[in-house]
Image 1 (cartoon, rainbow, N blue to C red):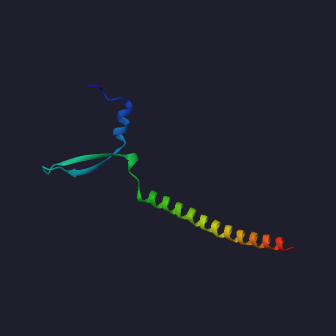
Image 2: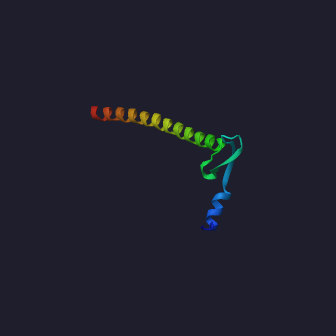
Image 3: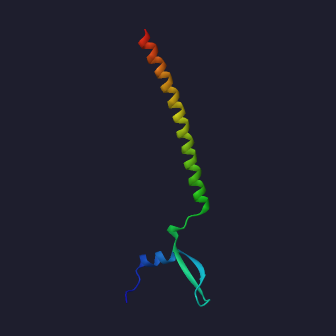
Length: 81
């Protein structure tokens, strides 16, 4: 049988353990890689960042609409002259 390498051990040591019960009622441990777990706080921060970017895009869209209206008015004025 192969001996675990140093890199294999680091993966095992970085796993989180969840307590579960098997069919016979005994406690078993289910391991999940830490890289796959994410905290609610991290999700909230990411969501807040996305919402802030959406708000900036909405403001940019409004400003761009105003600029288009002004340009159209200027073009109409120039054509009339």
